[in-house]
Structures are given as C-alpha cells and as structure tokens.
Amino acid sequence: MKIANSVALVTGAGRGIGRHFAAQLVERGAAKVYAAARNPESVDIPGVEALRLDITDPASIAAAAATASDVTLLVNNAGIMTDANLVTGDMAKIRLEMDTHFYGTLGVVRAFAPVLAAGGGGTIVNVLSALSWFSYDGSNAYAAAKAAQWSLTNGIRLELAGQGTLVTAVHLGAADTDLSAGYEGDKIDPADVARAALDGAEAGKLEVLVDDWSAMIKATLANDPSQFYSQLSPTA
Image 1 (cartoon, helix red, strand yellow):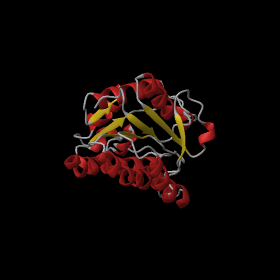
Image 2 (cartoon, helix red, strand yellow; image 1 turned 180 degrees about the vertical axis):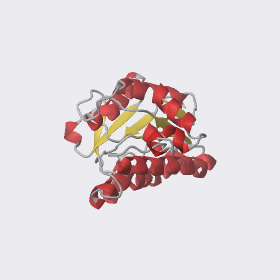
Image 3 (spheres, one colour; image 1 turned 90 degrees about the vertical axis):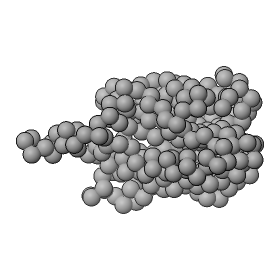
Image 4 (tube, helix red, strand yellow; image 1 turned 60 degrees about the vertical axis):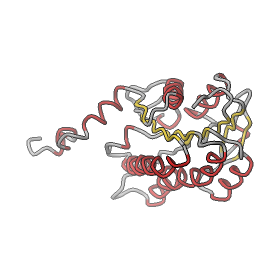
C-alpha cells in the first residue's frame, strides 16, 4: 500500500491522534484526505476535506460512505474513554464504550468494505490500545471494548483477505491527548503514533506495536496472569 496518491478517510480527525493522521497523510502525498469528525467545523487541517461522521449513528456512517466513495485507506481512530468500571459503573457509559469502539468501528468497516473492494482492496488501519490485552481498575469498560475491537480486527482481516484488503492493528500505551488528560504516567507523542501506524501499513504489517509498553504487555499474555496482576497472586 502506497500512501502517495491514496484517498484516505480518518475518523475522529478533529483532535488528538486523528488530527495527526490527517495532517501526515497530506504531508505524505495522499491525493485526498477526508478528515471525519462529529463536528466537522472543528477540523482546521490545511489540505483536507472535512466530513461529518458520528460512528455511533448508522445514518451518519451511510452518508459518509456515500460521499467518500473513492476511499482506498480507512483509518478507524475515533474513540472515547468514560472511566467506567464493569460491576458498579454506569451501564450507559459501558454501552457507549462498546457502541463506539466495537459497533461503531464495525459499522464503518461494513459501510466502506465495498468501497475498498471497488478500488482494488485498499487498507484499513484500526487504532487499538495496549488495554486490548489487560485490564485496569477504573478503565475496565474501555479495556473490554478495546479487547472486543482487537478481536473484531482479527476477524475482519480474515473476512476481507479475499478482496485484497490489508487490515493493520495499531497498539499503543497512553498518548498525550485529551483522551488521557487524567493519566499521570508517561505519554507518547500522538504524532509518533500516527507516523508508526502509517509506516507499518505502508510496509504491509498486520500489527504495529508503537511503544515498548505495548510490546511488554503483549509478551505477558503467554504467562500466568498472576505474574502480571500481582495483587491477585496467592502470595500477595
């Protein structure tokens, strides 16, 4: 997949990582970049075409797919973090996490899969998280939704292989965006996330681990969970 002369659409492009995706796609020579956002008037990136898109609204998705019928690169970046837990958290917030990360992403993929097929296959980039692979008290709804989105990514990769669509999963720790404003640990530059993701997609990678944290988390999956969740260890 070559970014130069591609036609890209980025969801959640009004701010954060999505804004960097859109800007870098322009810099890399994409022929057209649709910067999609719930409030397209917030998009102020030179050289893009702002597009209204709420990924939790099927009608909005259908309208976007009808307008952007020439897309060859789809970046599913839109996300939300409600800071809800699962057992005692607000069910409306938990559903919103799933509606955004799982059902919203799936809705966009289903709408644009025929568009990508018509263009020869194209590429889908799904922005996931290291929290696809572990849980954190206070963000368990987000973790569950991202785990579902990871599984979704693996599933659509298989289903779309026959039409020649590459599906790249992007995992990262905390990026320095509004979404992680309340997080006090180390944060990576969102520009670096977009750069690594686009480099990986252009190289044909199925998975991009943006930072050492993501690589470490993935490596723990083969171990006994008590080694990671030390508070649950019998000797804790």
